[in-house]
Length: 71
Length: 454
Image (cartoon, rainbow over all chains, first blue to last red; front, side, top):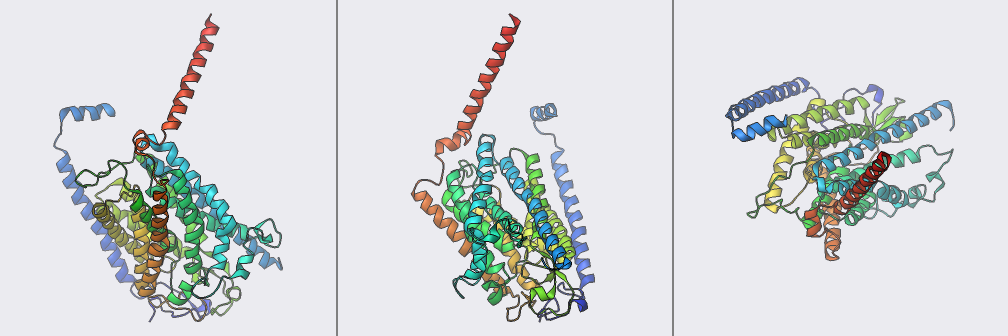
């Protein structure tokens, strides 16, 4: 068994194509990759919304004033 | 050089490695910037000098004996003696270690490995900032940079190394041979060195010591990424004919290879470098809740986790390996910090050490059964071969020497700076010299102006 389809390199490289693991699963891997990417956006936007909701409560007036002064 | 094709290949290869060396210099520039950014203002000059002096100290020792170790140690001491024949051409007094019109490659090849040595030493340097004595760190730098990492390279990053032959160890872009060993070494040092003053509250809760300059830190990490890309190219043989490899590959098709002379492509490592960087950044952003420091470091950790198999992975695999690795590494860092009260100032043990170990083990599963070498009689890649390799890298050649030498330095009282100096800042002496010089020149200018006015 070899995940890349070759157990040794006793081959003529002119006859060799893909050598990555799990050939034939490219579409499934793409689906997993896209889920990861879209999931990232969903998590990120939810967290950002919660964070902004919390942060919009103005804190200590003097501290906010100092922040404004700092530019 | 016989024949135009041979001459062209040699000159191309010579130039290829030379370019990678120049790119890899950026790793050290990045590490210097990163460390200075992470340290507090009162420790800047000391932090910078500590890392800069790694360059000459590791360079000269790597010339004197480090490079010879790589060629002499592949089977030594467990499966054979020293390979004195291969080592002879790489001794400091060998004719090939100088200007020699019949050898055009040794110098650039030596330099490529040397830049890896700087990196290994610099990783340790980051973990120990703001409290280690420079003299102590420089001893560690020579040991990790010119002795221990190059022993592991001879064993597991050489086409004839015993770990490759008998364990099927596969570590194309050095998850283990540079990152795991340097992270393990750093862990051994900080266990003895102890945390910075104030790092832990009286009840043991860790305090964050934020970087003083996040912008410098960001540029530093981006330079490290850039240099790391050069490192990837440096780990490949750019073009070689099957008959020159002399292994099992048949036919006449030339190829690029990894360090083990097994086929890969520059295209593959370009895909995988960028996809593992991206997977690491995305996962780190989420797991750290958008913390800039950990997101930047997560990009690096993503690449490091995928590096063992990035010569063969599919780009989506590289992305997911980078992402999974970062989540494990991040959680592990804070668990270890809290449990054992260890102060890893820049997260070096986690980003390099834990990522390296995790990456090696994942590669064992994803590349299970793949050939580790183009030569006959070598073991194939397995999870257990990779796991044993990870223990050798992180613990045996990394942690143990780092811990042992630090214990010795501690006993001799030469490991850590005095508490008073730590509170005042390591730049105390330099600050005074600087302030005195400034006051003197201002006074001189004022006196000159006053004299002109009268």
